[in-house]
Length: 271
Length: 280
Image (cartoon, rainbow over all chains, first blue to last red; front, side):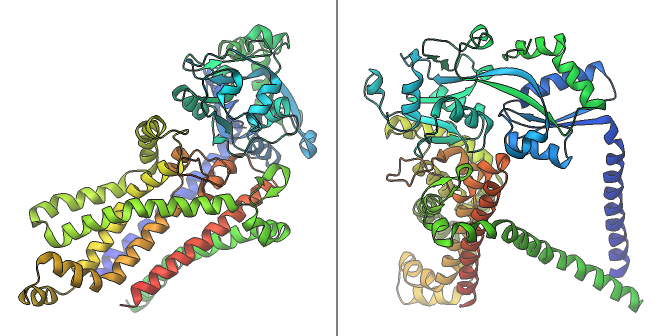
């Protein structure tokens, strides 16, 4: 009696497994219609926006945008898991063999709570703060209170760019709080009047205040003219000269329409 | 008929073995990925080094080991008295009607996703700590409090089972000798259920040390060794989850090596729990 129940059960189980396998195969067959972009979480929201608009323009195409970080994206391209890797840091070492396309410029904004009276900071002071040499707001002429420094995790494109542009080979203090996304850094700074952090300029909103660096505010015009010092490039990385879907998408991103879209989202176009 | 039965047996055995197989695969994979970097850095430097800058070639995880231990101890300090009190009430004092409501409620606590605990911590607890106690709010204290709540269901339900396993005959004997109900609980039920309660605490410890999401959200993840409970800390689990997305090369191996250390700590805890539970 028990057999009669168990046997069909196992039969169904096997059917299920086979069905899943079948679905898996089916998906790889459709891969030709799918474009996968993986990489930097700084680029991700912009890539998603571009993908959304481009998918409307060319029905039947599926663009899959994944995060994971610049390094993960570059690795995915090297291993063929993604056609396009999004990177918010420069390529180094063996990665230089890959093909890179600059899609936009981005500034890194140093942000504080809107109630913080500081508006301008020098690059040298900023370096001292993040190196842990200045630990109190009193050093900037404010009421004495411990500074809460917020940084990104090791390996993050924003952090790597910040280290290259600001830190001059000093290390970011180990006492700094570490958050794993631009949004999380902004969230903390928005609620802590004594915090200071840095995020991608495109993601600054009215919850936080972006500081001027050496008197230059991170505005689009200043970044475009290369006056603002904390500026970095956003890259699309492909294994070789892009072809097929990847190439069509890159052409769209660099077109007037694509660039206007990026500028509307807060980045600075390449033209 | 017999062959069919044997076939089913074999298939089920195979399915059962697949669980052990996946455990073995995970173990082998973690060790293969992580061990080379530990040996290259040197076990002493890896475990007792306090400088973690993996993209610059420094792989010391002492701060994270200590943070994991502090956070877990903190969680036990907050969670265990609360859990034990709750378990004693539910097992010994509460009328059955109350138990019927309370027990499922506590079990529901175990079903809440950890990201929800983390979110509540960030939104409610962290501003309170920042406002009243100072510091950035994201701290050892916040993580310990959140984890203290998260281990409650584990500790409570296993403790209740342990106390229920004490024969009613003992209790009746104690009451007959003139002991009050509290004296009976304190002098008889708790000592008799001791090994079960210790197992419950160790399993709670395992849960606390392995928790990741909630800790990342409320602990601040700073790399220094904490000197006060208001300092931000980074646990072993948080280190892996935070950095894995961006890691490549030696950095990635070092994160797997962090996993090895965590794996060994949890294996020790689980083995201890099994030994104590078996020694009734």
